[in-house]
Image 1 (cartoon, rainbow, N blue to C red):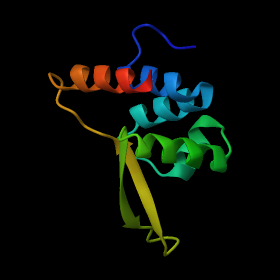
Image 2: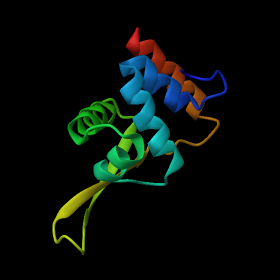
Image 3: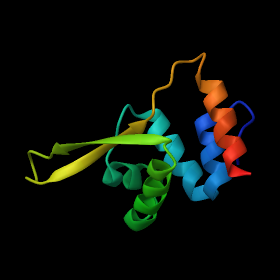
Length: 102
């Protein structure tokens, strides 16, 4: 359930895809950046569901990612985070995003 005082990013994510999107967006909001595995662990969702949600949010321009090498595992992972928008601009962009969803 979405609270009326919830961050606009969380509200939009829920509008896009429902409860899975809600869990992923709340997890991203709590951390500065996170990997898909960290999000799956914090939400209790299966990794393939988390990746589907992240791919969709990334495609819609709501999150960004950087590729970094995991020193422990030796391969590259993506650290994902919210698109940081200055506060005066953010409401207009969110309104535009909601408009595009209709």
